[in-house]
Image (tube, rainbow, N blue to C red):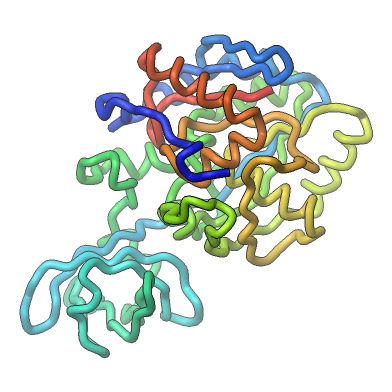
Length: 336
């Protein structure tokens, strides 16, 4: 398949700048793969499509305030450091604009006793050392919520809540698993009361989320590795769900990637660079709730592998016509 196969027209005004409030009041487009039909609902209606004995799988990663805005030592020029992941004690991979202008060991001052030291760079990433008495505390104090660039506004205090799921627990992501943003604690409680199992995986969202596909032949695209873990109790729950011929419902493409890494390779922990695009035979996931994704993105390719690509693009064009809100803070889709 070609990159151009995954393109669609999106008017810029449909990119959501803020999420719906309350979280579960956003719109939900339901896609039925068997009948090739669509329905228009509200997100909290997702419960109507879940049956007792089904298992809902959520990604409990927690977003870190990964954007640091500092000044270059000596020149005092403003510069932004986007932390990606730690590789060892105080050493991080990062994205830095105009990284070529930095010299080895140059300091980027964030505050009096908190600075970033530039060590090296490759084609895409910088390697930096963080100098801090307490990194976690300094990130909380000086770090910014890493809103995606297409939101086109500065982060605000309320984004600390908006851009985090209500079940976020394990710190490590530099982007939110946004399909999970629509769930409230009350909705999850109602889902449990219905007899639906709720299980968790952890996948720390990293650079792969931001990296555009640059090759027209999508098979030549290389995904970045992201760390994941699937707890034993989640695996047992999934096994029981499958034995009882019930559905495993993944919340978001990150949950899909973790579950399908296990389904394909038997791995329950470590790094995954699984790239799912049509055609792909899903081994674990039966239903999927997700957001509306960027044109030509690996996320749109994954969703197009789960449902027929023509059906997905038809649904996306319908969503544009119906003025759905797109991307991280936008509306949701359920594929059954």
